[in-house]
Amino acid sequence: AQSVAQPEDQVNVAEGNPLTVKCTYSVSGNPYLFWYVQYPNRGLQFLLKYITGDNLVKGSYGFEAEFNKSQTSFHLKKPSALVSDSALYFCAVRDINGNNRLAFGKGNQVVVIP
Amino acid sequence: GAGVSQSPRYKVTKRGQDVALRCDPISGHVSLYWYRQALGQGPEFLTYFNYEAQQDKSGLPNDRFSAERPEGSISTLTIQRTEQRDSAMYRCASSRGGNTKDTQYFGPGTRLLVL
Image (tube, rainbow over the protein chains, first blue to last red):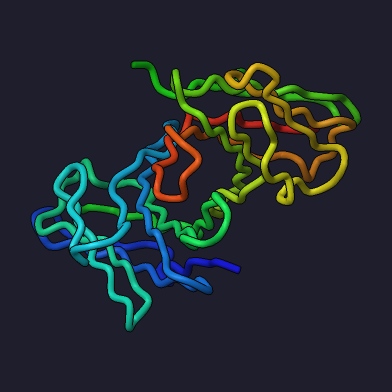
């Protein structure tokens, strides 16, 4: 079975400071990894994904994530947070040899303080 | 083009009633997925389709839940004899193909409240 852990409920960061949202995963094979963001009263928006190749993946709105196979992690990062980055962030995983379902973490609320 | 759309956006119903939730995927997308999201949790998989064929329905919680996609485009998730525990956000997503690499794009969701 595939699963994701997002250990922190809420991440508080001052505007302009680096932002990190943590994610660890568990799959039986190799993973495909995704980050989504949810703004209030909006759907889940795709940010970025890791499929293969370079472990550092760049996505929308200045976000990036680093795949670390030995630590089974896929932390989301942004060098300089904006107030508008305040939202709920979800990490998700698929086993490349498994079915098409995504397994999501419980989400992390990010609060960027002006 | 337009993104995934879902209707209704909000549905309030009484226990025991049937409800039908609709999803209109991105035009040309082969695969369509249904998820359910409880408050404070991430989405949980319910079922998915490639074209009109239901490929996996193992996430449907019981036989009160069913889904169809008869023409390979619009899909309907039906919950019969609703119960209070069915209250949740129901999310639909579509992807270009059926490959596990493909990105799933989500609609705005339908919030269901069963009284």
